[in-house]
Image (cartoon, rainbow, N blue to C red; front, side):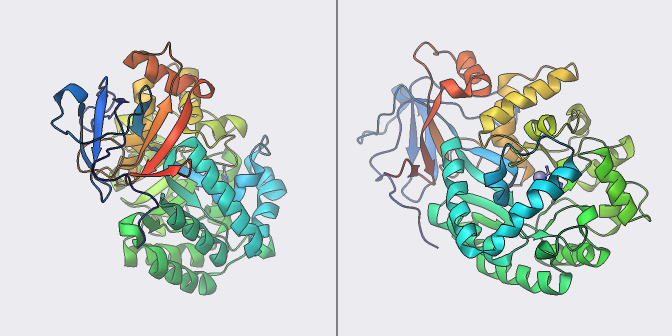
Length: 426
Ligand code: GUN
Ligand code: ZN
């Protein structure tokens, strides 16, 4: 695998500003270091993050003060082929899929179009400071290959899958299991585990209404065979659950459809998860599955408020997703702000520290990647951002509030992956 471009030399750790690494053991408590040195080894791992006054390091440093260093954001749910239709969503889900999503996703049949959008997609992730993304591709193997290639060329960490659908969709997006399975095998062979494990293939049935039983079963078998994560949508809108149960009348509820077909397990990541019964929440917890909360999309499509307490009190890992293109922004700071609004609608106040943790370590934990990313602790990959806050923002509390609630007043100055600057291109 190819190392990402331009690593800082050993003797030039890329920072001497403040750092905000969250600690796994104390989810909502962060460690803030005023005037810190982040020491990065040449191969891209963090050696230490400590107060400058305590460091024994004597080499030259890259001084980024007064920027704040934070872990790169984790966007646990978004759609690559919806990059160019953000802002089109305001309407019920199923109608929006027919009207806006399917026609746009059909365009990814054209490799030239897919390549152009892949470049846009990567640029917008970088501008937002998202260093790990979990993406639905289109139903096209070539476009999915192009997405992986674009991630690979930039060095970004990415989990991506061919979007599976073979019913209730236009002919151009239909991919039966006989074609889908060999195409997925090729993509797994080519990309899964590449870039030292930074690229991963995820089995991606769009949702039950779009997939025949044969396709869902084939998806479950392939996930099992390769021990892959599975991502899909669940309980975003009531009409969707009705469509799912019309397609699979043998299911006792929406979750039961995925459960009986082998798609519910400890590596399943469900997007939205709004309209679920106690039974469904209990079963998700029992199975060890995870949830991607997509609050911006939920507001914009009128999907309803997600009760975060349900997964939290059951110990279900929760990540945050932009859900581009039903979400309106790639910026995970906007997602944090919408997560606050969502909780407030249900009478709960999430602290900026909790929101920040959701967009970093929470995402890493929900993807079983917390040993690699999500904080700026020693041993993890040096995926981090230098963020510039206005000069009057100086305390830990002010910085966290700024990150969560005032994204347009602070800028992502630089993005590093495995210690190499990838934005702006050096
Ligand atoms: N459910 C099935 N497909 C989609 C999609 O593309 N976006 C959203 N928000 N929900 C979905
Ligand atoms: Zn989605």
